Every structure is written in structure tokens, then in C-alpha cells.
Length: 264
Image (cartoon, rainbow, N blue to C red; front, side, top):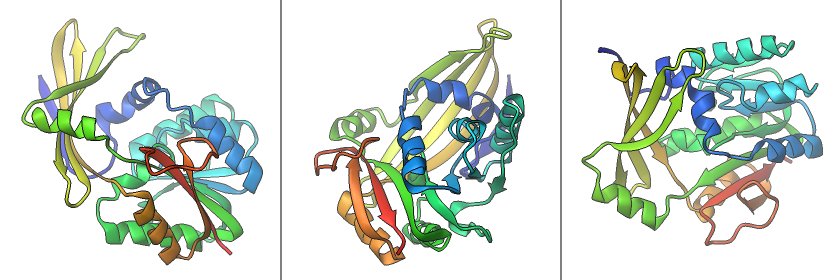
């Protein structure tokens, strides 16, 4: 067994990058139509923050939409380019951290899938990211940011077994029958609204573990009131909180919600 990677940065690499599409498909997110409709309603060009392997981006570009992508992971972006080539299209990609993003172009629509914004663990860095989004929007441009709160039940379960690895998901690759497993060991910092997780990815061949990769990741969550205040401080107005991937107004009981903010 070979232990290949141990890192604490928020970059997807190795096994985690190569099987990302298969693993994320198990979540049945259902956000493609939400963001497609957002681009149709608010206009192009658009920028996807945290585009990863192009799960959404390649679909939009292949359909003729003017959408660019940003991600920190070079391996994920390489996969995105390959997928675009297979679809007969080219993608414009930026390898940068979202809070450091700089471009001469301005966008009508900026969106961030899958609560990716929570991967910025430091509040000051998150505020910088919101300001960068604002600066890169055209007048009347909009930002779309989904967020998620952990449920009390999830916290209780994770805290009760915080010293143990928890099985998350498994994927069998059809080409060679290789099996990949994801495990997580989470810890909560409730006072600071942070979830610190260790992840272990295993590759199995004929039932034997042949490779293991370990990663550390922190995720920050926000209440609706907290995030609205941050958007206002960044310059956004006409701020809406909607329920998950709909345009229905969010309630204070919703754990999944998305914010829409406008630059005037």
C-alpha cells in the first residue's frame, strides 16, 4: 500500500480529483437548472467560482453560453479542459483563489455551486472574496451563493463518533473495476461555526487497498442574517435569500438556502 499525499490546502488532487464527478453524482444536487436559469435571467458573460471538473461549466459552454470558470486545483481544471475537448468546445479557466481573483473582464452573473463558499474558513478572507465578486460584476450584475447549515442531528451524530472514521461513499470504476472509498473524521467548533474534517480516500484492487490519500479541510457556515450583513458590507443590494435551488423565499428554518445579491 502506498501513502501518496497528505495535505491541508483546499486543492483537490490525486484520487479525490480523478473520481470527483462520480462521487458528486451520488449527491443528486439538482443545481444545473437553477444556475442555467440564473444566467438566462440575468445575462452573460458569467463566471463560475469553484468550477472544478466542469460539472456545470462544460454543460453551459457546450450549449453556447459565455461562461468562464475559476478553481484553485490545477488537476481539476485539467479534467475540465479534457471534458470540454471531448464535447467539442473550449473553456476559459482561471486558476486562482476566489478571494484573490483578478480579471479585466466584468460579468453579468457570478455563481458558486455546492456551498463552495464555505471552504474559505477565515471570515476576513470570505469578506475579501465577496468584495472581489462585487468588483467583477457589471452594473446590475448578480451573484448567486448557495450555503448550508449543519443540522443539530448531524452534529450530534458526528460529535458522538468524532474519534472514528465514518464511511461516506464508494464508487466502482467501470473501466477496470477499481473501487474507491471515502471516509471522514469530522470535528465541530460550534462557537466559531466551523467543521474541521479529515478525509481518507482509498483505492482498492481485487479487494486490497493499494493506495491511500489523506486530506484536511475546514468548512465555515453562516446564518442568513450573518451572510446578508456580509453581502451588504461588500456593496451588494437587493439581497434575497431563497430556499435551496428555487426562487421561493427562504425561512429561518431552512438549512439549505442561496443568496442573490445585485451590484448597482
